[in-house]
Structure formats: C-alpha cells, structure tokens
Length: 353
Length: 178
Figure: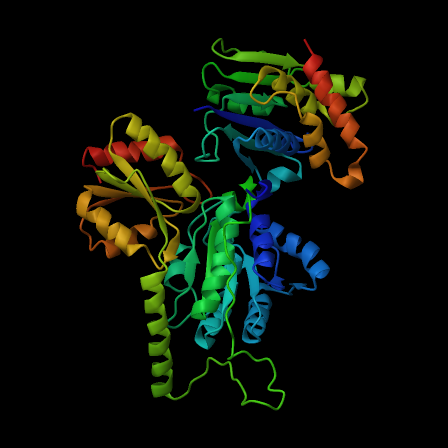
C-alpha cells in the first residue's frame, strides 16, 4: 500500500495535477483556494514547469486557452467570483474544442459573497456560465482523496473528449486535511494532432479558433461537439450509492453535503427509517441511470445542498418528476448539521415533501 | 466502532491549528481514519481560531463537529461558545491560566491545566497548546504517548528545528501535570 500522507484538499489538487503531467498553471489568488497557487508557485519552477500569477482571472483563463491550444496539460483555479470572470474564456475554450482543467473551490455568493463553503455555483458549472451551446465535465469531490483522484481523472477526460473538466469543490474540502495516497488514479495520455506545435515546414497549419461566421459551418461544429457530449453522457457518469439496496427514501447530495448527509442516513437507519444516499460524483454528466432506478423504487427524494436548491431541478428533470423531491439546504457559507438532514428524512417518511 | 471528535478553540496565534495537526498525525500513525478541518479566513488573522479533528476506526463522515467528545478551550470566549456542545461523558480541557471560571456541568470530565503559565515558567511561551495536548494523550490510551517524538519531528519545519525539543518538552510537561 502506498504511504498515506496528510494533505489539504487544495494541495492534493495541485500535487495530483503535477503527477498528471500538468506543467502549466495560470491563476490569480482568491480565498479559499489560494493553497493551490501557493503549491504550484513552490513546485513548478523545480520541475521545469510554469507558474504564472496573471494580472487578473480573465488574463489567466486566456493563458490557459493558449497553452491548451498548444497541446499541453494546463490548469487554472479560482473560487466563485473568480470563476464568473473566467466565464468568457471557458466559452472560447469550449468553442475551440481544446482540453483544460479548471478548479472552482466554491464560496458563498452571489456577488463577492463570503469566503465560507458553498455549492451555489452548481447552475454555473452544469448549465453554462459562459455563452453559447457547450458543456463541461463537472467533477464533485467529497474527500481529499477524491480531490487528487478526480483531478487526474479530469485531465484524462478533458484530453479524451477535447473539453474542459471542472473540479467543483468547496471551501471545506479545500481547507481540510485527510490522509491520501496517489496510487489509485491512472494517468492517460492522448495524441494531439490538432495542437499548435509549429509545422516545421512539414505539415498543413493547424488552426484553433472559435469564430465561424458562416452559420451552416457553425451549426455543423455544434452538432459535432454534441456528438462527443453524447459519448460523455453514455460513458462517464460516476456516482456512489450508500445503503440504497432496500431504501424507501433517497437522499441525493454531492461534495461536503454528502458527508453530512451520510451521517444523517446512518442516524435515520438507527431509527428504523429505510433511507439511502446517492452521491453524484459527476454533476455533468448527471448520473441519470442511478436516479431513474431509484425513482422506480423509492417513495421520494431529499436533495441536500449548500444553495437555494439547484441540483433539485436536475433530480426532478432526470427522474421525470416521478417522485416528490424535498429540499434540505443552507447557504451563504452555512452547512446543515446531520440533525437538520435527519429531520428532513423524518419529514419525508411522514409524507411531507 | 470508536470515533473521537476533538474541537480545539482559542485565539489565532495560540497554535490551535498546530495542536490539531499533531493529533491528526498521531491518529494517522495509529492507523486511524482522520480528518482535520480548520477555521479559515479573517479568524486566522488575529481573531478566534478553531480546529475540528476526528479520529476514528471507520471512515470519517462529516468532518464538521457539532457535538465534540473532547473540547480544548484556550480562551474564555471559546469555552463559553462550546461548553454546552460537548457530549455528556465527554472531556473538557481548560487553560486555567487564561480562563478563571469553572465549568458548571457535572456530566463531563474537566481538566484544568494552567498551560500558559507553565509554558512561561519553562521558557516555552508559545507552547501552551502542546502542554494541553500532552495531558490529553495521557488520558487517551488509543493515541498513547509512544511515537510522539516522530510526529513532532515530522511537523516542525526544518527552518524551525529548534522548536522540536521545545515541543517535546511541552508534551512531557503536560503528561506529568497532576
């Protein structure tokens, strides 16, 4: 077994990125993710990599765009308000079909909001954020170990499908320390014949661009892109099920909320309530099959989120509103206690949704 | 299944996070599942600081502690804030050099240790935190005192090497305190 070390979630992301072959980091500091940049600043110069603190978030995402076009593994990280600033670049990267990894260690919003943990960028991550028809693969770690393994996975998927992978974490998972080892995720590499690496006089020019003034060409581009997205939806959904075998009620939660929810599920089981948990690990693609299967057998769902109710819309959507869905939520940097979630489970059992 | 939830609270600068880190590493050495969650943000810059450490023989669920088994209170506001959250049968460690009130609960075990004064008397002024940790280890056989030297050596950064021996001394003072 690999040695277990204690690491902060943010540091785990940075170390995993380096192990995944990322040698280009562009960012701008913001709480609660600054440890990622600090780690990169310390490590990158020693391994021949680039750490660059740009003049703004907008500059840093465009540096990511440029490096991605050159075919190298590249990342940036920020927290909620900073991700909003990067939205334009995210759209350009999507429109150019180049791979990148973007980390959002979420804090409370909207606006400057606060610096405490939140999940209120779910819509922004899964439905767009930038303009135009595009998707990002959205990975939601619930432990420091997953901060590392999903970072490596995120790079692999980005290269495989030529799109952005976003790590959608939160301040708690970013700041906490847990033991981790780096052995469980495999680094995959992909040929990048489209990359701007210089023709050396031997091949046609490659072009990376998101501008298509002829509508029929732009339409074809979008159709092609969505063919790839369809493959992602078929092949890449990830989720964890906990005590779902005989469950009559299903809690759905991701990230830090799922950790709290798990405590509540165990407590409810001790009271004899048959409840389980589905934890989406990919928020897009949403684990549709797991939710559909659950909808066939449970009496209702409870969505636990650190926002005003965002994922709850997807639970309803992907299950065709087959069962009632209750919302158990806190926001602004607050986190529900296991008791609050337990109370929501008790209410569901009484038919109160 | 055995899980110990430890909440450490005090002022920024008292080594709250370091004490937590020490306990988390000790747990890791004992092959436990552990989590360490600090308060972050403005607290770190001189206000109150706290740290949640969970040690368990099963995977840790929520890393956020709402009902600690053990509270270490390094100042009065922290004691007042958390005293009622400690589970019945739990333990409270009070730095009695800084906190001159008594805990009024009879369903918890309370240890009064004048740690800040002891640290001053022994010329290790910033290590009251580790004196209390030393006393805590004494009461927790599952953590034990064995191997604490190695944890200290791992945690103290090389450029502060002089602090290694002082940390060991603080732990020993806490261990011996009656």
